Length: 537
Image 1 (tube, helix red, strand yellow):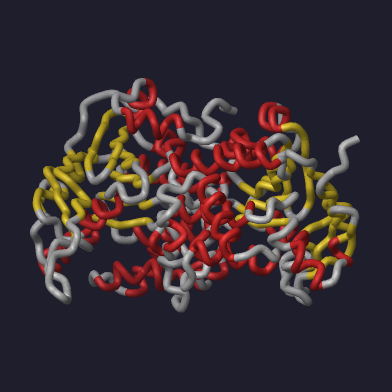
Image 2 (spheres, one colour; image 1 turned 30 degrees about the horizontal axis):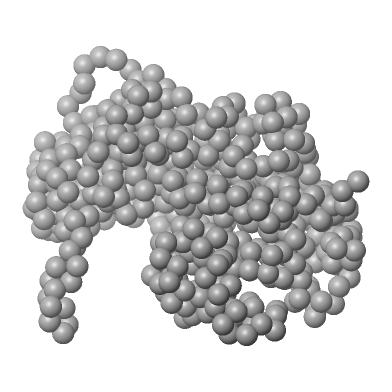
């Protein structure tokens, strides 16, 4: 029989006494074979990452510590290995790819030097051999311009390029096992597809075992050979990928699979098209081009180029595109955080494009934003009730009345009114996003700009927030411009879709029509890049 690369037996990891449960990992047993990709699926708090850190000996002891079990790797129990032995294993025989490469990479070192350091620490080869090996790795992960990239700092690379550097680092010493912890969550759909294809290609080439931690069943369908599902620290289901995806046994697994947004758009309502709540006509925004500190002119970037777009009253429109396409710049021009260089922004028929900050003041409440990161957008020093009531209070609403309305809005978004007296850090990510929605609704807006509002959330929480936004849009007759790079999200909640690339709208129309017959090559590329596109629950 083939000896597993990794074997975990009855692993139990204790949490501090003040935690909401005694064990982060509770009796987990699993194996990973050579040349196999095992996907570990579960929501935040399920114990996935704690289990991975246990393998590498990276738990924040003594507060979080292993209290039982064994982790067998290459004829040794890693839980009983000394620190010197574990240093040799980390990065050598077991490598890790992190979710956010900008945090994992040293911002003060060139990326080539960071990989060179691995060879200097773990091998005795000379500088010329190390340099050649670095170049080979960058070529293996398909980085463009491999002569230039090694001498670049992390901030000079795109998100996808930084993730490729992380993969090159993980492969440097040809490890037996790679642990990939949500490595594609923060990436655009096309970049995500490239990284997943690359991982499969390299895993097949080197025969490496991969533990792929994710909450995205689309990714599971794309790369996994086997799947294990975790909940509250326990392993509740495991099996071959096709069996788990098409015939899940556990109720929790069925709930996770059913929460994945379908790529089949809903059927939008027919009838007369209402007047637009927002009409953008010929909008332009250019950055740069001015004289620099030492003379000359900086590079001009046409971030938004002659964009025209409408959001009908009571409807939702998705603005889809990759990072750098101009989506967020367009949103900032709409809310007045950026001044457009040309074109019109009509809000309920009023052209506010050229208004000063003072002139915009009476209109600001009509457009509210729901942000991507709910924790960063909520003041951690203020109670939730004060956060929701602040806007109306500044507009002249008596404080008691604003607080009463805050209680009502919390109930409307599915939270208890008592939540008004608590602080943002006391809530989960999905609950914080509901608070952000309540804050936006407190201003009685005509239009909500939702900027990637669910990309940081687990799939089941994501579905809850999407359904909530759609329900509120219908019940309150709201208009919504939904900025996203996730076409599954666009199909789930939006009547129409506009595809943006390099600052231009390249295609727009009813979501069902564009998904059925995309007219632009870029739209077809986006649709083809959706992970797990061939699998639908």
